[in-house]
Image (cartoon, rainbow, N blue to C red):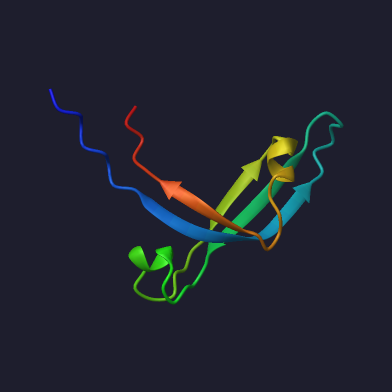
Length: 86
């Protein structure tokens, strides 16, 4: 039996442009909205999915402080988009 074919993946470079912390009223919880936008590159990996200047954004509400601490304003990140086969 042969192995199943791997689903195609999209790899996209994004930059963190906003981290907005919110007051939750509870000392034991926190929340931050994080925004990432795609990066324009002349010859980078984003050219594989965008023929022109990429647009859009990824916005997430994150409620795990350690996760927010791992993100930095202005830093670039790679997002891997693969189908969920569950």
